[in-house]
Length: 397
Figure 1 (tube, helix red, strand yellow):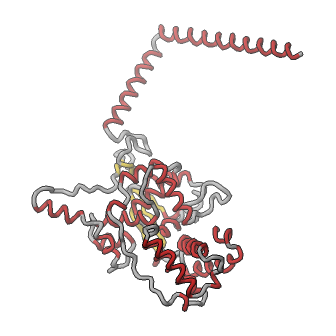
Figure 2 (cartoon, one colour):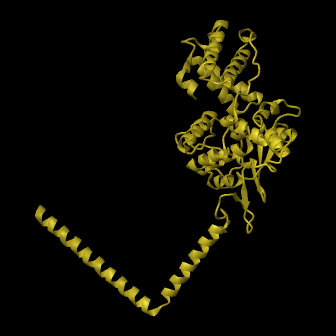
C-alpha cells in the first residue's frame, strides 16, 4: 500500500478505517480508491497528520483541488471524490463537524462526444494488449460499461459460458447476497474471457479472483484499482491514443452508445441503475444522434441508422462467437469469410502439388541424391572444424 510506504506513522488509522469499510460491505476497489485519495490529501497537508486536521485544513485541501479544477488541470469528478473522501473519513473519525459545512453536490457531465472512446480506438487498444488477461478485461469493460468495482471484484465462477457467448455476474458490494448482484449477457467479450480463463493460473479454483497480477512479488494477488488504472494508461500509450483514458470513461462511452439504440428503461437496467434514476439524463446530451437522424429521415435524406455497436460472427460449424473481423474460427479453425476460404483452398492446392511431386520417382531420386550431398558437406565441415581445433591446441603447447 502506497500510504503505508509514505506515511507509516499514520498507517494504523488508515488500516482500521479500511477494515471498517470492508465490514460495511464496500468493495476492495472502492476502499482502495478512498485510501488513494487520502494519500493525495495527505501529500498537500504540509506535514500535518490527518488525525490533526481542523476545519481550515479541510478547507485548504478543497480549495487546492478546486483551483486546479478551475485552471482545467483536474476534472470536476476529482474534486467530487476528494470531498466524498473527506466526508467519509472524518465522519468515521468522529469529527463530522469538520466536513458538515460543505455539500457534495452533483458532478456535471462536461464530456463531449469527442471525449468518448471510439470503436477504432478500442480496437487499437485491444491490439496493443500483451496478454489474454488484458484483452479480456478491456473487452469486458468496453462491452458492459460496468463500474470498475463491479468488474474488479469478479471471481472465476462469475463467468458462465453458453451458446450465445457468456453471462457475467457483478457484485455492487463485497458480499454474496443476491440483492447486491446483477447479471449481464455479453457476446463480444466472451471469446476473450474464454481465452483468459484458459490461461488463468488459478483457473481450477472457482472462488479465485478473475483478475490477478501476473508478475512481481504480489503475483497471483487480486489486482487493485491503481493497477487497473495504470495498465489502461500503458495500453492506451502503446496504442497511440492521445486522449485521457481512465476506467470510468468506458462507462460513459457504453451508456451513451446504449441510449442511442435502446429505450431509457432498458439502458438503465443494463447499466445497473435503480428504477427512476436521473442518471440517464446525464448522457442524453451525448446521445443526441437520434434527434439528427429523425430530422434527416423526415426530409428523406437518411432512412436508416448507420451507428454500429460491437459486431460479432458466429461460427456455423461450432457456434463459437468470434470477432466480426476474425478470418478463422478461434475454436475450430473454420474459414469465416471469402478471403480466408480462398487462402485455405490455395493452401490445399499447394499441398496437393507437393504430394504429387513426392509421388514422382524421378523427383524422389533427385531429392534423395541432394540429401546425400548435404550429409557429405556436413561431414566435411565437421572434419575441418576438428582439424582447426587440433591446430589451435598444438599452438598453445
